[in-house]
Length: 185
Image 1: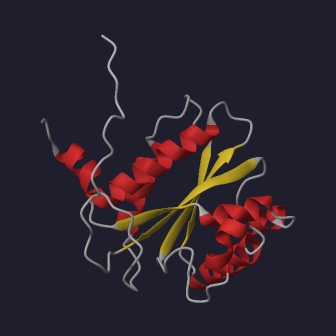
Image 2: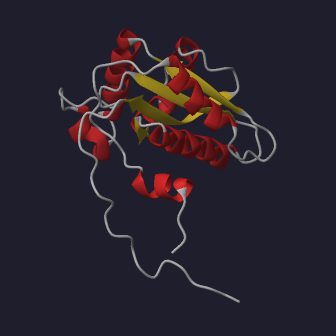
């Protein structure tokens, strides 16, 4: 089977849920953000990245998201767990928002998020795609949250990325499902 550095990065990337209590370097952050801007985007690049490295703001987001999540049965156990942190105590979180009227913004934001996850892995950072914070978008206070985070008007969060230095051994990838490909030649 063919392999190269990119394919190895894809195969080795894992969601990291245990981070060191140390902020990442600015040059590492810029590399990750730059990778996000190079994602495919229906030629619109209608995304916006909010970088949060403020511990108090991250704690506030964690609290607010968990309070809202208590209303959703599938999330109640996590929301009521005082020790659970939706960002796994990562020192950096990138909120990925997109212009709501863009053509394929959910796909565009997903592509940007994946690019950032792969870039993080390629430079030795741990990352995790976090969807939990998105419960805030459905809240009556959503506009207040978005304003506090500096998300532009007409934009909505679609994903977030927790970033930091890995504080645990990385697990081996689970076996891939079989029979998920068919060929038509």
